[in-house]
Image: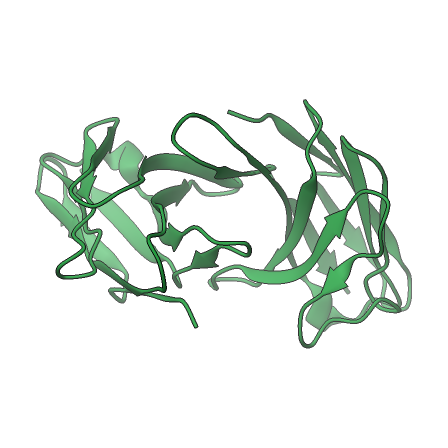
Length: 116
Length: 109
């Protein structure tokens, strides 16, 4: 299995500010994924980040609001910009790893964000 | 497109009861199927998976069988514990994996 760590694990922020979430994977991976999970809800994919190329954003998410960096094959950051209370969510980093029985997706522990 | 449908929660059981959480899917091709568990305050953890029809995934007393004829991957456990209280997500593989909405399980002593 993959080991994925995220920092910070939680934060309380003021509206209008920005927060950068870091994601570290224990081995090189091609694709990394950023998800949002609002309270009591399922996962919503924000974007897919491949090393060396621009992130691909899902409908409803834009780069100005959620800029992503992917400087190497083990690390990515997601910034939540100009935050509002509606951005209060769990943000999850994920990567995929192949094996004899195919690929499996693994998740970090999440960053719990509360915007006041 | 691909989709996953899970039973609505919460599912509330007494300790040692039998658990079934239903999951059905629609997909093109032959995806792998997964169950993930999210304990309170934590991220998602892979619980079990099955990669082809009739495969049975199992872990920690949980089981699910990949049924192609009924496009289902129901999660079962013979005797739940309080520590199994969590949210369970069914998912299928793809370039962008597809997740169900999650089913909350609450187990009372």
